[in-house]
Amino acid sequence: MALSRQDVAHIAHLARLKVSDDEIDEYVAKLSSIIELVAQLQAADTQGVTPMAHPLDMAQRLRPDQVTESDQRESFQQNAPDVVDGLYRVPRVIE
Amino acid sequence: MERQTLSEQARALQAGQVSSRELTQASLERIRELDPGLNTFINVCEAEALADADAADAARGRGEAGPLTGVPFAHKDIFCTRGVATTCGSRMLENFVPPYDATVVARLKDAGLVCVGKTNMDEFAMGSSNETSYFGAVKNPWDPARTPGGSSGGSAAAVAAGLVAAATGTDTGGSIRQPAALTGITGIKPTYGRVSRYGMIAFASSLDQAGVLAQTAEDAAQVLQLMAGFDPHDSTSAQAEVPDYAATLNADLKGKRIGVPREFFDAGLDAESEQAVRAALAVFEDLGAHVDEVSLPHVGLSVPTYYIVAPAEASSNLSRFDGVRFGYRHEGAESLEDLYKLTRQEGFGAEVKRRIMTGTYVLSAGYYDAYYLKAQQTRELIAEDFQAAFKDFDLLVGPTTPTPAFRLGEKTDDPVQMYLNDIYTIGVNLAGLPGISVPCGFAQGLPVGLQLMGPAFGEPQVLNFAHQYQQHTDWHRQAPGAS
Image (cartoon, rainbow over all chains, first blue to last red; front, side, top):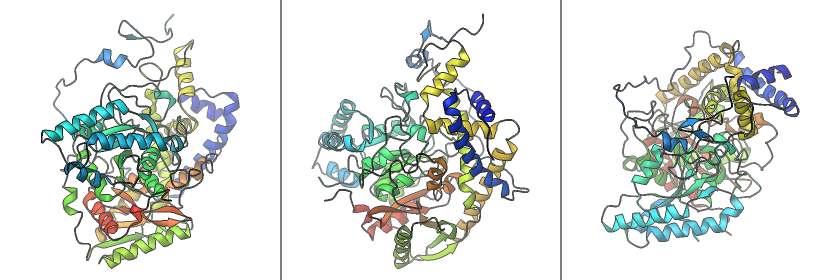
């Protein structure tokens, strides 16, 4: 199944990716061929098959509700592009 | 210089014939000499490696050495290393310096191994040829015009060329076994949950598993022994005990049952590669194993299933890269939404963006049932095929890849052709099972990989069969550029 330019623009927005006008046709072609590949599954008979939740049928482990992590904000924020007073700075959201 | 195995290096250290500093310096020299042509490393950590080597020599002097203390090796650049840049092959993380060690990194460090550097890889482990790396393609030491495979291509090429005797890798759809096959070395992908994923940058969390690339199964077993085991930091870490892998390497294969999946010998399999695989099956028969054909009727659905599940998980995992807390940021964005969109447009490469888009699409409203839910059903059918086969067989054996190493640039314009290269490796990832690739001959002068697949937590069998094969063949001793 082929995707349209509008489909690609919509997916890109959902994925928060900017796609320029000169990139869009390539995305249409390549994503359409990928979707065509994965659409082969439509022919498989999966009537009554329980979707896999875990490859080894393991249950999620629980742990006691205790504090185990210490405050490492300063060391983590050394990787941040823009920090002020221990806060992450982004473009203004609220006028 | 002759290529040494990890075990040979460990024995020389134990016998006091060589120091860790000498081995580490030799490794660093070989990297300086050969890496400019191969591009296997993103980051060489000379100062840290020499300091670790001296610490290893000192520990040995105090009688505190473990079996692999002081042996140089390399980490795929997907494992977080505290204080050492970890890029995941991406512009997005070009300047990222992790504040913590991955569990795999911490365990091998505690065992005294010396990390000489971080190896090149496909960006975020998304690729089968190492050509999606932001830091350039890795060259195959057997023929620099060809790919070493991917995504652990840097680790594979570094081991094949003898820069290090072993390296870590990760395998989501074949990313350890396929490059091991294409470079003529041994690579094991353990059972899902066997090795901790903590600090291993996530691609597809239900499939990702760390493993080892080395020259021999015996070497891979030694490193895996140190990496494997329960980790409370990983919510899907298996609580099963880790057996002593070395103890069963020499178990007798007499009477063992090998299943050969008919579907792995399809029209896409290169004829010369098939001959090499069939010859390997004859070796197992000579060792007393019974070889029979088996069918995995749904395994043909592996590639389309994988290319729904993996991109879906990737689109979610990679949403964390937004230019706010770490990683690349587009400067000068006027709104928060533009900051996200421009950061991600510029920070990610083409293949990563295609997978994010594919994953976003298959999870989007109105398409979830048709794609993602359907894929989790076919994934269940594929896993059940393997479970049924392991009722009758101890091990499944087939080719690792349809062809030997292809040329760089040959498949970069056609993502679907690239994806089909993983047609034989993806099945065990979807089923969560262990697999190993060992060299079993040559086709067109290039190495061919034999894939051994085991039941869940069947690492002992997989390593046992691989080791016995290597005791009776010498394909794993063939090194590139021997001339």
